[in-house]
Length: 248
Length: 278
Image (tube, rainbow over all chains, first blue to last red):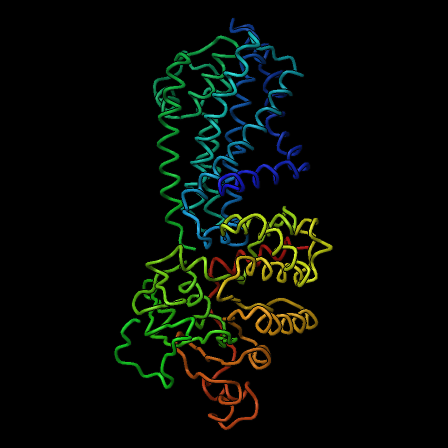
């Protein structure tokens, strides 16, 4: 059995066994969906932008993927001192394979969570423009998952203390989410804010998913995918490099 | 064979030395964790590093297990240099760290299996040996249970079982009975002595428990402040210092017993983990 497969399978097994955590982690996106969705819905509609729920659903899916992927980075930090990671670091296996197995596993879990949220949005009334677009949208979601799973691996490999990770969560993950156009349109933004949104990989992810699912896109799906692929390659290489530098 | 150069060790190195450490130094910035340490471990023996926390025991194990590079000096495990032949050396040892490295969300069997895959143990052998080891360590009945339901002693036993899956030449045990109750400690000692006899595996353990070193080890190296103060069997050390207990010998050799050291980030995380432990 392949090393990558076994490490990938491990992440998926752990996810599928953590039923309580799965339900709990749906809470946050559900709140955004419910509170913002129904709260700001009327305003959005009056501004002539259509149904806010339709607009927001891809954003909430993107948010879920981002958060789940970054949390797997926290798990890695804990793992490093108290768990399984040390076992992999001392095994006669190239670090690259270990990093790939973990990152793919983390990305898969993020996609699974994203899928769950997608189903929830459907229940709440979200309607994709076409059924054919859904598998394509999932490819883009998978790209987002890989990007942030790799980033989480890079961060998890570089930080030694839990406090460091709290800082990352507050000063990196939340800005990534809020500056991504997940909950507001990208048109007509003040110049500085617009600049920030362009630097955020999640912006292109959410825009791509939105483009495929409801036909509304700011950059064009092609550009979105191109940017995601490029950023993906860079982050995976960066993550692999940081992982190889771990001194236990 | 590596050239030995000038050596102040009493015993000459044997061809059956499984571990050879010569004048190894490890510094972390201004801190010298290991300060010119030299020793040999013979094949098939149980060798103990006895010393207080912060003496350099874990750092030495990390260097031998390829996790750290020495600042200077030479290391050899089964004739190979851990810094130059990482993968080859890793096949030859198993290690049980001070902090658990099991996956608590997986079953005992799954933990064994992943280890087998990581160490390229062929599937059939993997299965047979996992079965044999789990039975030997009285964990066969719990093989399908999640590790998070195991007691501290059981987890430790599983880690040792796992460490032996790929038939290593050396088994490293870093503080193997730390945090265990007296019965589990006793069980562990019997287990370690047994598998040394049955499997023929060389055991390198670190400890700050006198009784552990006394009861389990064939030879002991007393380490303090990163230096080896004395090496020999328990009887030899008592004779050298003219005392009748290992504790007395240790006191004579090092001058003090317990000392305070500053908490590291690892210690802080250990405290947090204790709060959340079952």
